[in-house]
Length: 69
Ligand code: SF4
Ligand code: SF4
Image 1 (cartoon, rainbow, N blue to C red):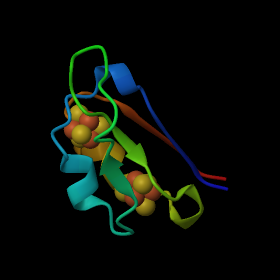
Image 2: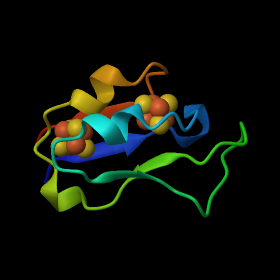
Image 3: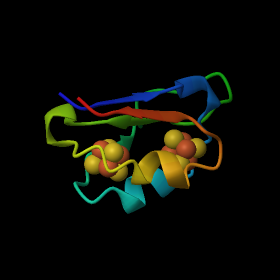
Image 4: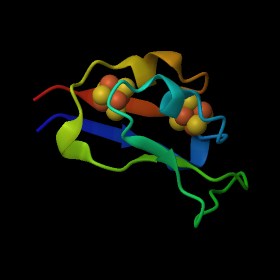
C-alpha cells in the first residue's frame, strides 16, 4: 500500500495539504493538539492514497513523507 506519514509535531494546521489532496483523505485532527498547539493533519484512509505527493509538495513545513508501494 502507498504510505503517507506526518511528522505531527512540525505541523501548523494550515490545512493546505487537505485542500490539494485529490482523494480528500487528509483532515486536521480536531481532537488532538501537537507540541506547537495546533490540530495536526493526518490521513483518514490510507488505502485510497494514489501517492501523487501533492500534499508533501505543498506543505510549507515539510511535515509529510509519501512512499509509493
Ligand atoms: S499523496 Fe496524493 S492522494 Fe495521497 S494523501 Fe497525499 S495528496 Fe492525497
Ligand atoms: S500543509 Fe503541512 S503544515 Fe499545513 S496542515 Fe498540512 S501537514 Fe500541516
